[in-house]
Every structure is written in structure tokens, then in C-alpha cells.
Image 1 (spheres, one colour):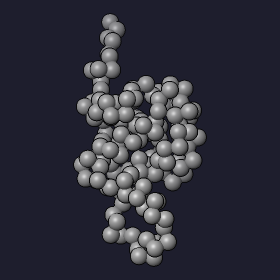
Image 2 (image 1 turned 90 degrees about the vertical axis):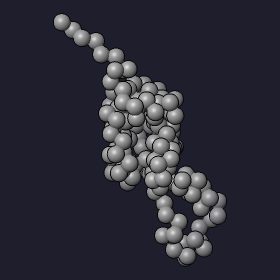
Image 3 (image 1 turned 90 degrees about the horizontal axis):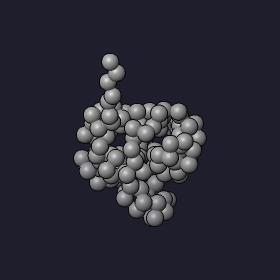
Image 4 (image 1 turned 120 degrees about the vertical axis):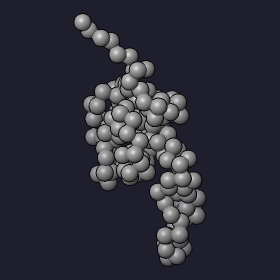
Amino acid sequence: MRVEVSTKTVQSQFARRIGEISGQNSFSCYQCGLCSTGCPASVAMDVAPNRIMRLVQLGLEGEIANSGTIWLCASCLTCSVRCPRGIDLARVMEALRLTSLRKNISYVNPSQIGREALAELPQIAMVANFRKFTP
């Protein structure tokens, strides 16, 4: 006897929330890896973008939160262009950042930036950085 399992029965609450925020169905990803091979920031990431999608599918929110990958995504859209399933992974990464920020988990602590760095960095870069990485 063959049992059909729909994605509605498999989806975790976390995966549903990310789907609602991003407008993307993470269960469409079949782990081809094209997003990771084309990502210019993947060499600095501790978890490849396709693995982040798998963690979303499995509802492993804690593992995503402990990873720096979502904060290193430059939203360059290379992954989205390369995806054969049409998933906009940059929107998923943004949704993951938003959920972390809503829980007051931020990647940048402004008090840890040295005065020398603050003096040399363009103000627009600092404003963009704080908007993206702090609650």
C-alpha cells in the first residue's frame, strides 16, 4: 500500500512562517546545489545556502540561528537566477534574518566596532549595516 504524504503534513511551523514572510516554498528545493556553487560569498559561509534550505525544510531553526550564513548573504540574487525551481533564496535569507532580529538575535554589536573603524567607514555603510543586522 502506497501512502501519499502532502507537504502540508510535513511542514513545520517554522518552515510555514518563513514561507509566509518570504513568499517562497522551501519544499520546492530538491538540493541540486546550484545556489551554493554560484554564490560568491559561499567560501566565507559555515553552512552552504542549499543546506540552509534543507534546515528550513526540517524546521531546524536553532541550527540556522547558530550559523553565520544568513548574515553573510549579500542578496546578490545569483542563487535565485540559477535555481531551476525558481526559488528566490535571497528572499528566504532575508526572512531568516528578520525572524532572528524579531527574537533580538543580532549579528552586529555596535559597541564592538572600534573608533578607528567608525571614523573610516562611510556613514551610509554604517546605516545600511545597522538596518540589516540589528533589531
